[in-house]
Length: 305
Image 1 (tube, helix red, strand yellow):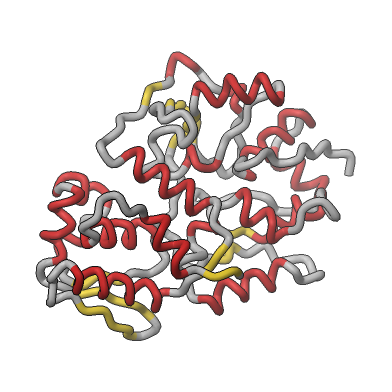
Image 2 (tube, rainbow, N blue to C red; image 1 turned 135 degrees about the vertical axis):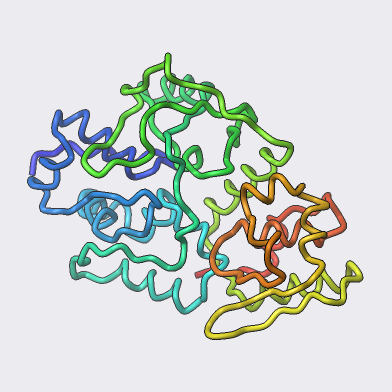
């Protein structure tokens, strides 16, 4: 095909790799699609697009499997500890099929996992990337909501004016207009949230929702909260408690919850689903030992996929 295809950097979002391909080849995304035969448009929520993964899997045959790309360069690992084991194993099996995927977006309930509306970066990381690779690239963790500080340097990220996604164009760090950049505002929870997101992105293990609602029920009991109940209904896992909102407000603050998880303020019943933030909010609110991290629970109950 004659299209130069650079190898994805560690933690680089594949959309950013596409942007580097476009820059090096001097071709728009539509022409790359025509020459390669793959439909590589991506959705704003970064869903598990087999066609995009297959494009890179074809380019890096023998060096990187589609499953490895999904685990190292997409948001897929953030779903793995919370989705049903059968679902995750089904997806893993799908990436190993020899037939070409059909290009559909395989969504396993991560509509909440939307990327930021504007691309972000860490100034210190950009300097280090230039020293090491002689170019800059977009790290996936910078584009995930609530990751507002650098997981390495602890400094606030810088927001650009470039869209986090685009249907007809991909954006490279060389497109940044420095005059339109601004530093993200951080909260008292920013470092902890970023660390949790980094842990989830590095995750390669699965748990299943039943184990999570067992943990939440046990924590509630240990905290002396008797009205927290967990139950299953219509293939979903639910937590209900009339006083759970008070516990969450005490740790997170009402304003922060209103912006990031308003459901807890308006309903006594929560469907857990595959969204990592729900689990973090509940466990941190119920766990009376602030020194214990969310990472501990992930390592306790997960198993290899």
